Image 1 (cartoon, rainbow, N blue to C red):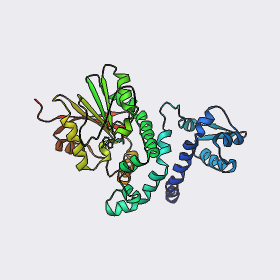
Image 2 (image 1 turned 90 degrees about the vertical axis):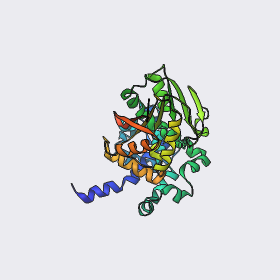
Image 3 (image 1 turned 30 degrees about the vertical axis):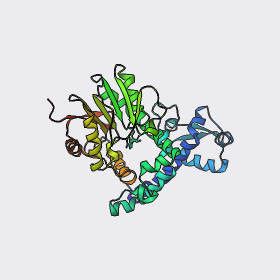
Image 4 (image 1 turned 120 degrees about the vertical axis):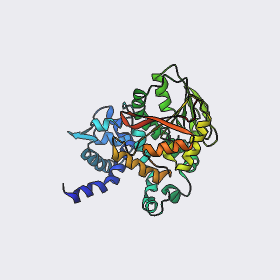
Length: 324
Ligand SMILES: C[S@@+](CC[C@H](N)C(=O)[O-])C[C@H]1O[C@@H](n2cnc3c(N)ncnc32)[C@H](O)[C@@H]1O
């Protein structure tokens, strides 16, 4: 391998992110799903400048998203995955990660490495959750991104973990309820409750919805699922959240964390980059099994097992300690 070339490829990642982000924002794959399009048709459908779009398409063809034969553009398999009707839609995530506040937060990474501080508040003046509460359009983009990512993971989680043993599953910090919908679809006898911040769950239908803060209280249920929640928080806050969950749990209940594991990841690059993302965005972190065991123990919970799924996420199961 030519090491310099490899480095050049790696540091071009920022351009790749933006090029794919713009493709998702313009909905290029959805337009091309209607059939092959000339540049004039594509520019008209997306309201763009045809010369600039030609240059973007050149890059996206080189990157493998689209093909351009006989003056007509089409989706490749990768381009098809960016369609809004893809089996596991990822476009919501792509639209989110390339947008202003997320993108700008990464300019603070070097400072984070020097100081240990989270980049987002340094760059934007306030923590990410407060910022999003004040910027509803970005909040919506983030919720769409999480729904997009959860959609990809949901099948893997419900295939790997048997929820039929539970009466009531509470999805704590469940966003717009993508995982909960998947659980209830697969296990129709289960009752589901979605819990998240009031503005996030407003208008969600299909199950009982409760708005609130998981630092105060969460609804009771024999399974409390927290997917991609604990990794958002530093240890002290994580323990607070888990203590609140512990209080809402019956003696035979379970806390189920759905998270990546640093020491067992089937995709170490993805997990390490997710950990950096937590450093930049939220102040949280990815953790090892032992680190989760210690967090749970501090909240009077005992880690009883980790179930791999056909995705980078594991289901980490815990029960109340001192169980009768
Ligand atoms: C990374 S997202 C995960 C969403 C969902 N579990 C998923 O995987 O798609 C973290 C969630 O925690 C929620 N959250 C943040 N602070 C919260 C709080 N104090 N109380 C309840 N939910 C909160 C956010 O609104 C967001 O939906």
